[in-house]
Length: 283
Image 1: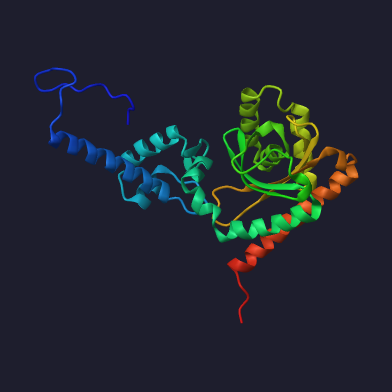
Image 2: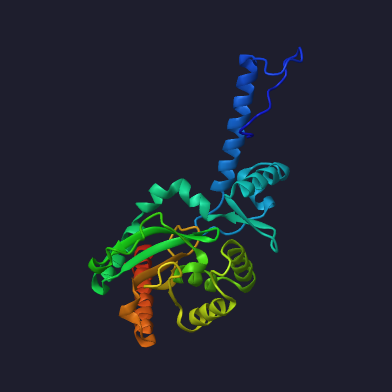
């Protein structure tokens, strides 16, 4: 809907004339119908968020393909869908997460992950977070602190530019080559100099060889970040599992490697715990 509609003309041609109750009811009904159809399209995507074509959405929703095309164009413009050009398919964007954030935050899978995160943060005296990507930003959804990490400035809802830390680098490195390059260029345009080509390629080597990325924060050089990827059931996209510690505690590459291996262990422990829930042992 246009937030600043042009005043309609009455039958006599006067602009701004009051509409009849019947006309208002008709317009209201049309607006509700558009909203309902848009929500139906969003609900057609399954928890694993497989990409769908307009034809597939038309079948799932039960609307003509031409109608679906108009709806997906609108949802794409609003930021609720992403478009995969090569496959001509749509998938839900991270922005949709905000629509169900409170429900998602109380999900058992997320609570279980946070229990593991809490034990890890206490044992290693650091800050650990779960984050997702929204455009060229990483958005922190969960943050758990050890006793020695109380001064690290990050909490639920914090937004960090993708090039400025280990979480964004791990996200980039986890992508396929073409979308990875496109996202890096987009991030470079939004934050010039935020991540050099050499730093970008080093992140790819780190993730390919070790499964995690290590980086000193561009905004707070006294902080060291380590990040890897984690898939939680029901999430639209993979999450980034990251930690932040005072850099002076991990100056040596061997100690950074050790912390990275601990993060991989945490990721595996969460994944295994969730697998037991999804596939309980038979009696």
